[in-house]
Image 1 (cartoon, rainbow, N blue to C red):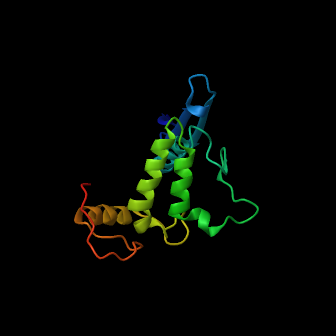
Image 2: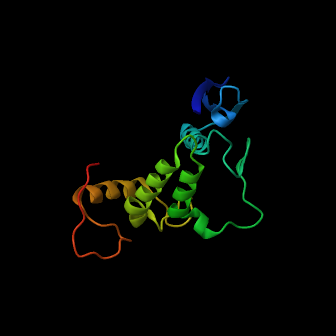
Image 3: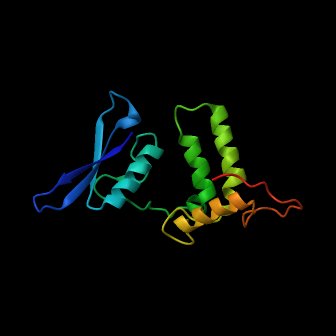
Amino acid sequence: MAYIKTNPRLSGDPSYTVVWRAGGTRTGRWCRETFDDETQAERFRDLVNGHGQQWPPGWVKGEGFVEASEPSAPDAEKFEVYAHAYVGLLTDISEHTKTNYTRFIDNHMIPWFGELSVSDRGDKLTRDHVSRWILDLQDGRPGPLHPPVRRGRRSVSP
């Protein structure tokens, strides 16, 4: 698992280094990326963990994400596409578990987040969306993209 190491600079300001072993193995080579901002380091750490202890696709060491020469399809930034791709990249879980994760995403997340973007462009997914999602699940309310149904939804615990 990737982790963040805080280092003091000569100026006294901290730097935040994300450290992990390539592939998550004991014998994998050590990889690191340094940030000035702790929030950016946490986001990058989560990306590394989500991509199986590998450099996130499109990331250039020391520079960040580099735009592809061809613009990416707008659908690639949609929550639905991103969530399914994320489950597909998970390692060390059974196909049955991947199927269950996919079913959970389809039934309990896509109706709320399906049209939102996971990038900083467009109508992006925010903490408020997640809070409303949890409240809707608790109260048994359908998501904005749910097909109309005659009977109410069952409430679930957060």
